[in-house]
Length: 134
Image (cartoon, rainbow, N blue to C red; front, side):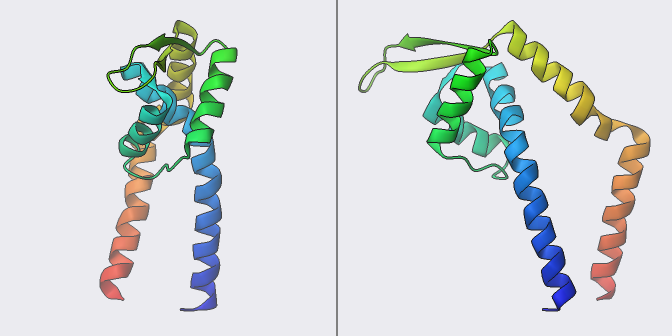
């Protein structure tokens, strides 16, 4: 592998790590918008929902949920469990839903704009062309 390719792969890895750290909040709030969940369930569901692009440990989920709860974005309650002790279930509050909606409008829906979609598709088409000629 060439040095340029190694450098590009390293830059991509670093970019993705930073990008993914910032997206834990997005994926977690998006999941909790669908239904209440306990921490472990939320973690595995975030991994599934993000199609495996986000992988988090349980401690990160607990820290995030505690931070969200102290900021009023989620609320929690203890519920009986069919197996074992009671579990703390978290659900999105109105403030959490509002924050998620604002984030979506400012940061996600921009990718749905036709001019942005065209630019993204042009990049993907260029790389597909390069792969077929290589």
